[in-house]
Length: 367
Image 1 (tube, rainbow, N blue to C red):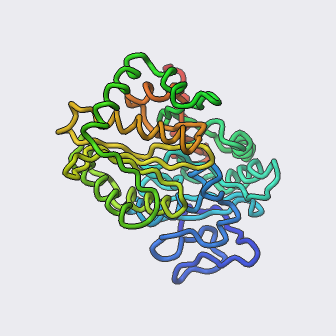
Image 2 (tube, rainbow, N blue to C red):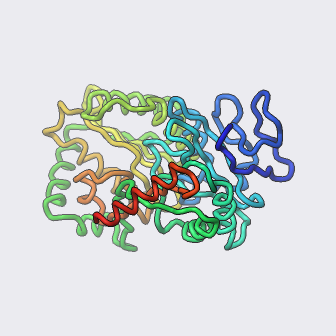
């Protein structure tokens, strides 16, 4: 593939990633046909599902590959330097990018689990050398404080690339006060929200039935059906990848990480639904919705309170994460905002790279 030149050096004993007609020595190889899962050798770079970093796990990437790859994009894998880091990538209409979708809350280079402290600097230098005189490459959903990211950027720059950061999305979260419990969490909320929570919880106990299926089986499938029914009657636009959320719920349930909550009317109709994934004392809110016809009863507010109380009291989580975006309601429930960034990797020896550098320089002057 012209322009795709991240060298792949397979680990000892690994099965080459080949597609028909391509040689074993090609620089960057396609995933197996269909791209529905990562090959086994990638486990040397992935964390276990309960390690507290959901977006560096096989669970996340296998679900993304099977259900959320954008139309016209091809998943690619690259190993940088001496097998010290894995880069999950996409080749699509925008060229070479990180393997991120509208569902991604984080992305980062994945160092080998036994790699040394300079592994990502070495990986950055390797990637930077390969991208000289090539079109810009765009990476999204990076945490500025991700482990090793500064070293990786340093390696890229030493190789002659310009690393052009931009603001991607806001992420609201909160590290909970140790030992504060549910009442301590409530005490830290704005007074108006505290009052609303207490009032709506009282009403929800009278008018709704709370469910939280967590394991694979008929109850989970009924819960997923209820979630999809609520989503269809909510204010939210159509999903870009409708199969992603149900698949992620099933995969997380199989690992014991899913917390799917629903509020139902006495006749069984779901009026609010949301799902969280818990890993390593962290809980991510992946999606929530409520039926607009029941908005006056605030079932969404009541359900969020019920779920957070369970996460604190039963799962002993230490951090709540409300995902991507600066929706106004998020700062009521969690009190800290952090910026997720993107990076454009550009080289002045390519016309598009020189243009990207000039645009950011001009934007800096204007600011």
